[in-house]
Image (cartoon, rainbow, N blue to C red; front, side, top):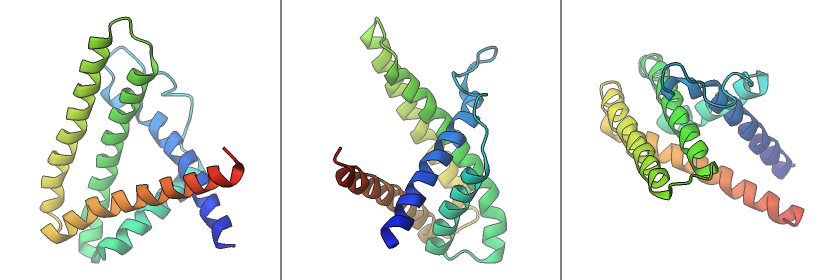
Length: 162
């Protein structure tokens, strides 16, 4: 039964992430252009439930006070939106067969630097709200959450014979 719940959670997370990713793609696309799929998918009830599960996990890990929670979550949501938008562009870059491999590599490096810049900028924002120990725990908790999802997906894939 526990494995079934895990599988449901993983599927819901993947669906929600896809909804979230495509819904936020336009924020880093140059004016006058639209990222492919950006307006096709809207965040549904499943995406909201999954986002709530992720937020609940992080909230438990950080043990936020009411005051910290009130200030933290709006900033965290913006942080996630910015990271997601860059990740979408990075995936699009990697999925297209560029005639000039050097340009594709340069864009890949650019997107990686954008992810680092976002993390640095929000680290400072989080540090204004949370003590340094909780900021560190936030980044570790995100990684733990992602690692668990990957683990569950791998287990599911092995059981399916893929």
